[in-house]
Amino acid sequence: DTAVSQTPKYLVTQMGNDKSIKCEQNLGHDTMYWYKQDSKKFLKIMFSYNNKELIINETVPNRFSPKSPDKAHLNLHINSLELGDSAVYFCASSQVASGGLDTQYFGPGTRLTVL
Amino acid sequence: AQSVSQHNHHVILSEAASLELGCNYSYGGTVNLFWYVQYPGQHLQLLLKYFSGDPLVKGIKGFEAEFIKSKFSFNLRKPSVQWSDTAEYFCAVKRRSGNTGKLIFGQGTTLQVKP
Image 1 (cartoon, rainbow over the protein chains, first blue to last red):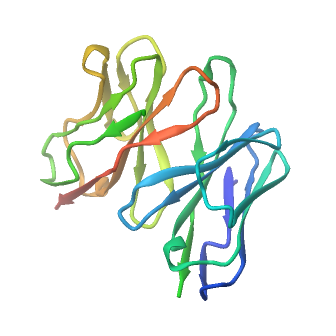
Image 2 (cartoon, rainbow over the protein chains, first blue to last red):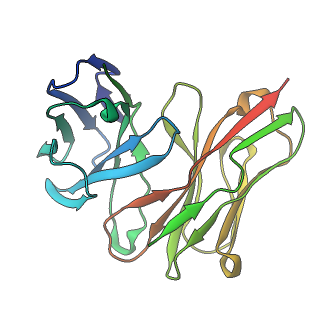
């Protein structure tokens, strides 16, 4: 059973296109996240949603729009793709308990290549 | 701003050698500390975590880490590495307060174990 799943695993597209990445977690967690891993393997948070409410938005261009239809899903839509968007995007989830004693579990990643 | 620094970017060891990867963070408040591992082509997996209590924590696959509060450090250790430990290792820190779940990652350390 996959705890945090993402689709697609690979995404190759042309500049200017619009694409979406889907994420689902079956852990019953209340918070989901999107991270971007660049070519130097540096990981940085982009967004997080708690119970479908946006709680972190880390100065990401507004071409990126997360959508959370329910607390088990967090999708990432990217408009007008640029070369610099090429990266691996990881979804994660956690149960943000009181005192912040939560652990994030990561999905397999989506490797996005913009040509 | 909160930051996490991993001192070793690329470590090459022979099998059976001992491993220590450094991690320092800059935040004066209470934090949760994590080490994640990313095997080639795979997603991040949790190695171990520290929330409170005994500052020496044991994780999976024989890894351990020691939290030294006075040094703002959380170094990862393994007495004897194996070829299968070849991977990228990430230290991550989360502020206990605020409850946003935001993880700050270090730059990562590439570990290459020679058979």
